[in-house]
Length: 218
Length: 218
DNA sequence: TAGATTGTTAATCGATTAACAATC
DNA sequence: TAGATTGTTAATCGATTAACAATC
Image 1 (tube, helix red, strand yellow):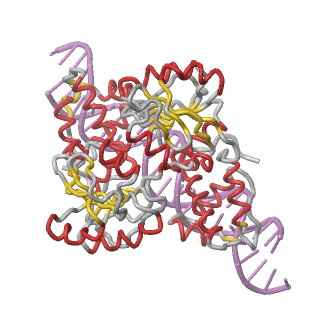
Image 2 (image 1 turned 90 degrees about the vertical axis):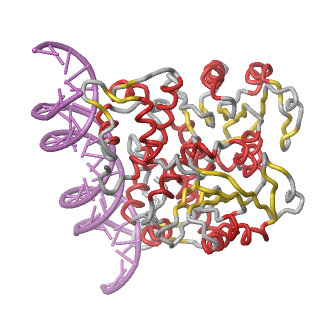
Image 3 (image 1 turned 30 degrees about the vertical axis):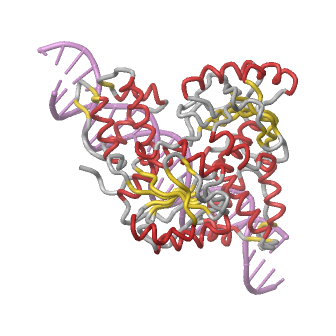
């Protein structure tokens, strides 16, 4: 299976496919055609078939796609059958909300440790986890070997902290700092989330749009 | 000023320009060339000049761009000189985190009301605001005329609630529901944020990447 | 078999990059 | 004036859409 390099545009659509296929599944759909899925998602059937064909042949002529089967294939492509161990740095408002709100295990991760520098927070419980002091990170990583980290720490500390974490073995960052994290290391992945930028885009839309495009996000 | 329709790709880059220009300003930069800015942002100078020229001529040949001036222009384009009144629905973990964490006034909004259905939460304080009961939304809107709403409510309620809010005058949604909100109304803007999709993308990267692209998000 | 729908190739469209004359 | 850098046009690249033969 799989053509060599998958474009970013395709990759960004995969989680959305996965989400829609899960919904279809819960609604009792057994099969779906690219045309029908396109309608539901606001895409074209061509695009959907092109996207899937980056990875293999998941459909059947004259029939379409098996919903559960396709969902499984896309899940595998996304690595959702793995549970990459992940830690959270920064248990402030946002960090706590993410820890409580995100379904890590269905996104390919397992949250195994939470750290904060604030002594008022250290020791408190978030779900099943107890917040640890930042000074414990290194030994924790040595023992538990987390591969991914969520950064919910102040902007100023982000870059320095990221470098440290890389030296402890972290290979993926989900970065909520107001800072575009760019790591030199070729084998380290970064997903920068800029909630502020997202809201700013909405400001543009609300101040401009008379005709708002009904199309999907980016 | 301004060519007719601005492409989505350009619009999504504007908040990032604004952010970088703010940083440059705080670091004492007075002028910057497209080449230098491109280097800092990981773009090409051509693209930057093309982007800006969608809106007008902000630079000066042989000199470059005045940092403060350019930041001001982009801020105006983004509507950051306005303070669109905004309400928040759902004061759970995520809602509270956003209320506390986001600098609304520097993003073109003003958070003026928070609502929840949970009686244990209603009446509690978040920053300067007291959480109100959802039943009060309509009268609140009649009096205070908010234009935008953040949705941090359960997925099932999102679509129904959005329709109601539109009838109360809401024209923009920042949607954190696990649901692609699509409203029929042409003059209503929606910014769907899917934190789960973002994390899923990181799962793909971490399970695939040996060579991770050092390029910027999307 | 006939109808449906895929996988895939070719055509189109849009976005990015390169180049350069204009001009500060 | 000479050097720098813009604004803008032209060239390239990539992504989306259309079309259709293959086949279930």
